[in-house]
Image 1: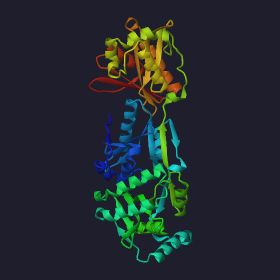
Image 2 (image 1 turned 180 degrees about the vertical axis):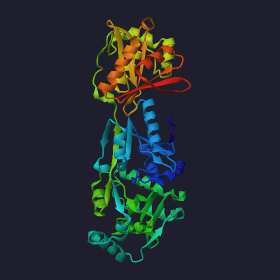
Image 3 (image 1 turned 30 degrees about the vertical axis):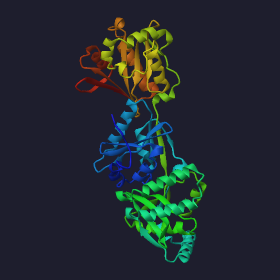
Image 4 (image 1 turned 90 degrees about the vertical axis):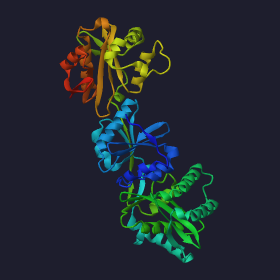
Length: 466
């Protein structure tokens, strides 16, 4: 199972080699965003299959970034490991933000998905040359503002900023705070604090920063991070008292970036009307979409556990009348040895008289699993459970029968009926099962209705497909 480490300014260097080669063009795929917004996103990371995998959690919901491959990275395997983690932890698979360029691949990968691509999430992407030159009639407004700034401050010059310029930068923050127009906005105050923190990390070498110097004081500054051919511009600030400083800073920084930069990503507008108006005035070449992809489960499409009928059996929902038999079955350590599950490992709180029945109901309510009671002449004699949905049209099937009814073929009959229902009614493309190598009866049962696919040190593995 994947294990994650909380992202901090101290360990962010582990992420930087992946992001500096990343081609996704989204601001979230950068060290700066992960560090700046770590208090909100609570991001964690791991390296798997040569890929950087980041998991964030906000508003009680976990979501994964799309894997960022290194030189030998295998994105398909990294996605598979994310899928396994979600299955093993009983939580939904959510990928967010997902680059639009991966949409077609993910639609093919996941048969049950829900996508969002909200306008407010989109990043503003600009051609670097457009911002560096402000050429043509369409940029006449920006040129006029820059010309006014140059006329009012003829000695203004662009300077590259490094950690050695901390005193100069701190002087700017003091002056900026005196003119700050959103002091009553908590989000704006927080963003300003994050911006100051990021400028305090110039000694890492991860960022390119610059500013406009007028009379030995900064009147504007900017900080970005090169990710592939895209400069993600994390911070742009200018003194309101110096008209035209903002567009002059935008232009000077674009010129400073150099020809290795193809695009500048000036990030999203956070639903702020003023920001949106301003960003659009600079004429982005593209609004880069960020999708949220929630992968569904085939069980989402059913509201109740159906009743299935075979030659000798009925399979349907476990009820209160079944509780005593079901509790006894679940507590039978001899049967559980072959079932391959020790309830003690996952026991939540006290083992009550209805614990196991309650778990089946919770699992179905969360669409993690579906448990069928196996009935002979109306009496519960066992269960069949479909579980561990793999997000790609597959799930695992298991069956167990009470000792006094074992050996009569009821398990095989019930197992085959649920497999048939799962494939042709529920809509799965693949049902898998396994049995311990020492469990000869289970091996015979599975061999009769499924195809053997392999074995390991402990189990024989089987599958049935449509």
